[in-house]
Length: 235
Image 1 (cartoon, rainbow, N blue to C red):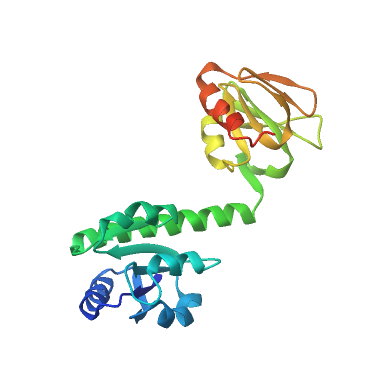
Image 2 (tube, one colour):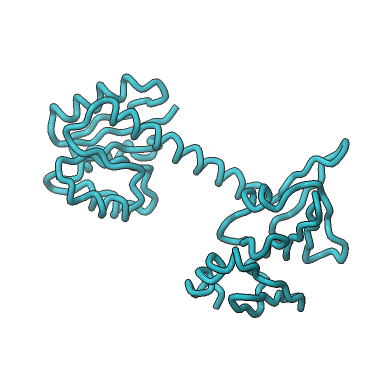
């Protein structure tokens, strides 16, 4: 169940939000408020808010920007010029008044997907291990100790900081890169995934890791790796 707050200074619009929320089975209305100030005491209990932007005293946009850890937000407004600014503050969706229940329901679907993904990422980050099934046992690998991963036929070799012998498991690089934190790992070749924190030198065509090993950057993967280098993150 997703706990939500509805905020709108227009009574009719607020009642419509309440009615729509009541028709979505995975939403639970925590509070319906006519101002951002009235909603503040309820924020700790909410997973998300449906928030009007153009309100007196404190606009919905300024309210979100003032929160150090804002909940997920779906903006509701009659003014389309706020759309770009809404997405700049990571809004899940933007509903332009007057909106139908079908449009509201679609926004709720996006909201649920957003919160499910957030929960999955938090669960992954709380468990820094990859778990592989191998025959009748499980092999666990600490993500924090991975230097690079090498594709080897139907298997992968996972090279770690604290072992001269790689961990070998039956898995594909394609599936493995999807399990790894994107901010810490990058596939640079059809046969290699590297831990970005272990780069000592790099160009668009090759990488030297801090263990002295040099690896090629495949042509297919050069645009993504070049973007990483251009971002300055590799400095």
